[in-house]
Image (cartoon, rainbow, N blue to C red):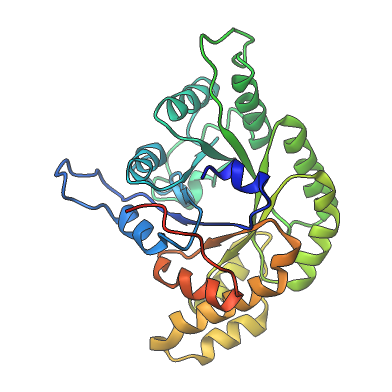
Length: 304
């Protein structure tokens, strides 16, 4: 079932994400690329799978190619596209291409700066910001491009956007969220959240926008990861209690402990949201355990 239909029915929508390979997909029909292997771990546990777009500004296979591959195998991809690497002509063309290749969902983001990635000398584009990108996606669906020219045929895709509950002052982030709603955003996924207070303060105001929101959780894999995020990831705070709990687990038991911690947090807050987006950072095999700890019934398998 399509993502929009699930939200419209009031289903609690579960998504996770995979990253395309750093390289091409061989033309051997029997080859299973890593993103598809990760998707196989998620089959029967999630309704949809985000496909990241050169995440952290690290050059990889394009998210559209990986999305099309997953769609052909029976999965429901959420195609991510960022403003970092394309101007407005390329962004509009990509959206039209994605729809023409059978993609139904997209998540529109600004994108990480190239300073963070593996091609630091690359010039970032940022011709548009994420609010403008949402607007042009909606305009394409109304049958015209950003310059006002009519389209022969228009796309029909489910438009998603991102919101950061950790941002301070929160009211500024909510103003940006309102702009995305007005521009045409139909659902939201949050950036990673770890603090109960942040969740409660955010949802108390954001639910007034009347759009489905999936709470975003990043699996904490080690105490070093938590410390790194606190030092280097703006707007995200990993509580010391989380760092100490994952650090107390033996290295061989950290997957099990991470699933327990993540599931416990989701269970506490799931009633406040219309879904959850789990970012496992490669540990897709623990997503079923996370859902079990969260006491969320998984959907039926979507792919064979």
